[in-house]
Structure formats: C-alpha cells, structure tokens
Amino acid sequence: MKPTVLAQAIAEEIKQFELAVRSDRIVLERRMDGQLWATARGEERPVVVRRCFPWSEPQDFISLRDLDENEFALIRAPTELDDASRNALEDALAEAGFVLEIVAIESLTEEIEIRHWKVETVQGSRSFQTQLDDWPRRVPGGGTLIRDVAGDLYYIKDPSSLDKKSRELLWAFVD
Image (tube, rainbow, N blue to C red; front, side, top):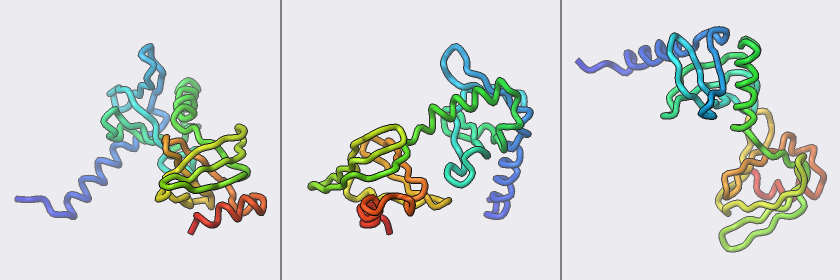
C-alpha cells in the first residue's frame, strides 16, 4: 500500500523532530583534516554550517549539514553549546558567511550583459559586476542582498539610511 501524503508529512515531521537534538548534546570540533566535525545522537561526521534564518535570526537556528547537504543536527542557540563547540561553530560561521556590507554606492553602469558597481563597504572600496538579470533582492529584516558574478554577497543593512545618490542608484533596480 502506498503511503498517503499525510503519512509522508507526518514521517517527515518525526524525522525533523529527531534531528532537533538539544544543542547542549552536540559537540563540534575542527579536526586535523581541517573540517568541522559534529557528534550528536552517538554519531559523528564532517559537517558544514547553514544559517536557517540568516537575516532575521542570524545568531540562532544553525543547521549542521553533512557533505551530501542532508541535515545532521540543528543548533537552536549557540549559547547552549559548550565553550569549545561554540568557538568551533563561530569560526565555521565566519568562514561560511563572509558578506561585504555596502554603506554607499559610488556608481552603477550597464554594458551589454553586465552591470558594474562601484561601492564603499565597511571593509573598504570595492568594484564588482552582476548579470543584468540578477536583481538586488530584499531580505527579511528590511535589508537588500546583491550577488555578484563570482558568487560573493553584498548586503545593505538599511537601504533608507544610504545617502541620496546611493538610494537613487539602488532604487532603480529594487522593486
């Protein structure tokens, strides 16, 4: 007999509940192979970190995913981890989530298939390019996110706080 959609949904909920191990029972460590390893429910494996809500809840709800991108465990709050695990998590998050924060847009020009940006970031002056069909997108919490052709992320925390010139350049590309 084929399982119903409801039965499949219930099975998925149970699986997710099992993954939500209490954060204080998860151990994280950076091993000699350079990878972040997690131990939970008596299992251990190399993992990568993914923020579940990167813009609205960046410090909480961290998904630990195995190398096949399957969720291994969920950390509800890093403060529940022991000190060594929390330090390993913070290092992994810093590596995984480097985002340049834009504070001003100096110029924005278009060519055939490319948009050229010259911006001022918290980290200094930058130039980057985006495809013409890659639009800046709004994210929960009111910010705007831009991905360049190399895959790097640029974030504008509060677009309304930009100077007039920057806002005028940006608003032409944000719905």
